[in-house]
Length: 633
Image (cartoon, rainbow, N blue to C red):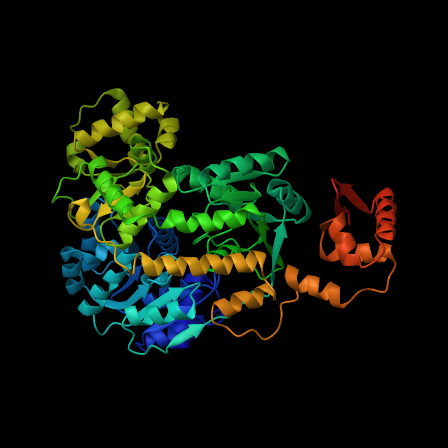
């Protein structure tokens, strides 16, 4: 079987051999075994199910939580001439029916499905009519109550298992503690719960560093000035992406912000500029990175501390996918401890507050009592908070807790591009009598998008405006006109998140937030926050080893690269050199250091160190700025 798998790999991806663990997972899947793959970010999880999908009969069903990630995966498969489609709540009925027709006709090999789509009777009926050979659960930690990103809609996967009891399951995740691993195999009803393939969480080419500073912007600029190559700076708010990008640009570092609220076109433009090297630094929320395969990221900086080691590991792991030396740096300050502590309170507001948010959401979206079952509504969260004078953090947490309790599903990454399909028969189009602008636009569409009679095509209003010489507003108006005339079906782009109602509305006072969703998850989050606080502020061992223990691995030796290991080395190996040589040696390991830290580490008379610093500065070997020493070499 391995020879056939390697043939498929070579034909569609151009690779001669699999990466570590990929072949073992594929062999297990092809033997019909339930399989769990623990593969760090950049480990090549997609290959482990896309290759078997092309070898197996029927359809491979892939459950994944992010609509944007689905779209990227389907587009990438289409580019390799692999038949794939995605079913999610954001599709129109017409689009959904077309995909179902293709499925029933055997024209699709991989079907990506959002978890909330699994519970409907229509989907259950579809499952009975198609041949499913493999069920893939991507981001499998989302099915666990103990996972850092639990999504109750993932529990719907049990529906698929009951409908297809003999079909093997492949669960994949990049980060899971031992408790989460056990929960995944239990929730997915693994027939062989010990069939687990692990890649070590060790990334030998990444140096994990924590830098303590009261001026994060200055330290960020300093690090980016010392470390060459492209970078990602992670923050926790959309506003800060723009602010920090401006700060970097003011220092001559080409940077752009990225977050889920940008239009699809703008996100694609910024991502592409970063990928081709035009933009050096992307300042982003955690919306950026998943599914983005850029191998030469040399530096990942966390300007804001993430709320868990799982998230930190995933985000830091986007550095150095090409195997070359890279840095992952956390910038920490004293106020960060308080910020992390407040996250717990913001994430678990009182139950009465959560119930009031449920009522407000329903009123805001005009969902009457007893109505709303399986309805999808555009949800402007900013306007919602403004209307009811709500603080965004606890309001969003309440919505998430309502989602975990099964009352609604907040789809934050919904951003969709405009799409068009011609629905009028060709012979009837010759009889149309259109105004000149509409005629020009229709001809431009027909010439620009050749497959538009058979399926929906993504369009760009600005591109059409440029090609026709019309304004964007005029193009939009004419597209609506052609849609009303039943010439085309036009679905305008949407930049707002969506709210999905998996059940009918009920009175807020009857809303139940279960103990497992509230008390138990609150305790789990507290433990995660304690772990990341210990990692950043109280670590007494190699940082890599601390992460390995957290994820259930037994370390074999310190990494010798993290800031803790470097400090231990310096303390245990005091050099018998002159103060000048000591300073130069330290600066080879730490490109920048304050004078007070330098004196502490040199273990020499402070006066001799100050004298050596002045001497080196006079010679241009180092630069001293506001008490910080930097090497010029």
